Image (cartoon, rainbow, N blue to C red):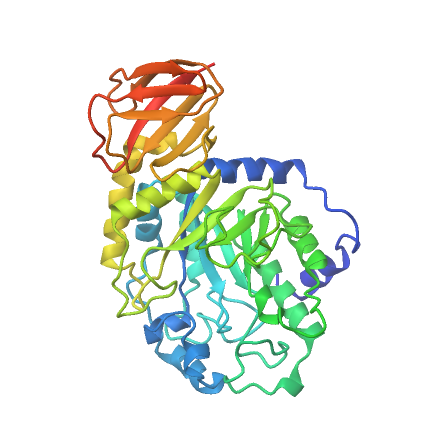
Length: 433
């Protein structure tokens, strides 16, 4: 059936505004499963990929939306293969995929009934890539999350924020009620036509953070709609502040929780008790940029994954697919190499919580039950002191079970390794009490 009546029913049945958000049992279980995965892949893919200049090209170059939209007639990602994408991502050890369904440029990557400006109606490709990706994720057992932009540089009804001012829109045509209804209709499509969705990942709240009068995004109603349509679906918002009511995960952009090195605005706020996620790029950009070949090494990426897990957070590692529908060769190589490492050490990352010792210059710790995993990333000595309150029963190298000497001290233990650590990550497993 088409969406008009369904959307109306959904909107009318929203939870009353102002009610305190109480997550359902399904939602709480989804939070636990999300935190256990510890590793996901972000995919920034849209019409912007055709320009190969990154996802902010329309804004940065000041291209009028009427001209920019003409690129849709040439968007034909003939080499897109959802099965290959999902298989490569699953083999890396990632448990979920977050893909941009509609970025700030306003182009929808699925067959939406709310606008013809989408990958099926506006391109010669004519295929619903979200449908293909969702089907493949469900088939291969990888959870699918949807990124959704709150702002839009192309739609006249979106009230002008601090971006998109050179993109040819007439601010006088802003119509927030119409735009809000459009967003909720699209979200309803995404949450009714593509099977179980792990999370909705919002972005763009910051576009109105300089308004003289605080902008009301009406998040309560929108979050309630999502939770009603799929109670287990998590809501996150990349707003750089402490979480709002109705949000189920806390997001950090290019920043480890608590470090505030990349613009977390509410610096005085404590890291929440919600599941945490840090998103980071594999190279420099989010969307594909042809000249951006500055990829982080496999060692750097594994270290970032370990330190993120040591903070009790997930790493959402980004790839910008090419306009032809392929994942870049270097990104695929990184996925393979991370996957090889995860084949050995994945159980020291997945299903763990932040360890007893905060992230240090030498590395991080993760814990599962009475097992503490000491990840030694940068250290030039055989002996390492660990300030621990728990009793250490024994210690072994995780990779081969070789015994590691443990010397108790007044405030912890000293581990004596068989040799100076030289691996990307030397993991010592402590059995504790």
